[in-house]
Image (cartoon, rainbow, N blue to C red; front, side, top):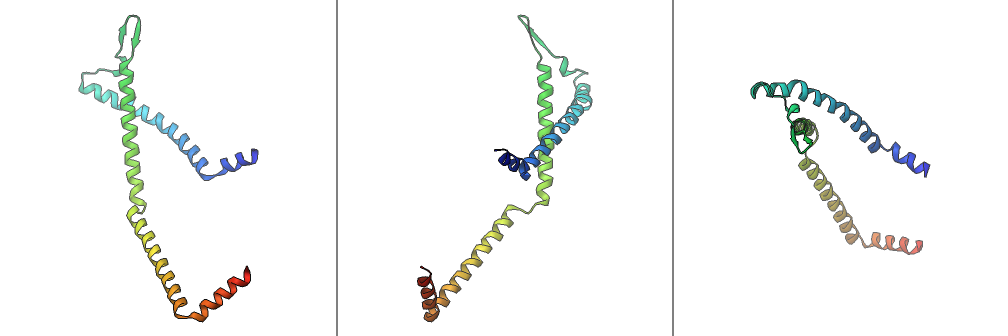
Length: 140
């Protein structure tokens, strides 16, 4: 079991995922800083200096910090937008899916051509076909 776990952990996908999680954690703190210290004050300028994090609603002794929720939504939207931009940039450098599919289709067409040529050669040369059958019978 330990050996299997070691193989699992040493796979590239697990290591890539670990690196992604670590970088994602660091990136989250950058985005939170961007939102809290740059974007929220900027939005506050346009709406009269209001800080969302101070917005609360108290009902029957319960405190609802919906301003913090607004900050979380802004954080999410910024992170989603940045990830969207990054994916678009990465996709620019990767080959398009259509090109890959065309290459695969061409490879299939080529293999079909080769198989047809082999078939035709066997049909046109009965001696070759009988030699193949004899070899097949001798291996049984």
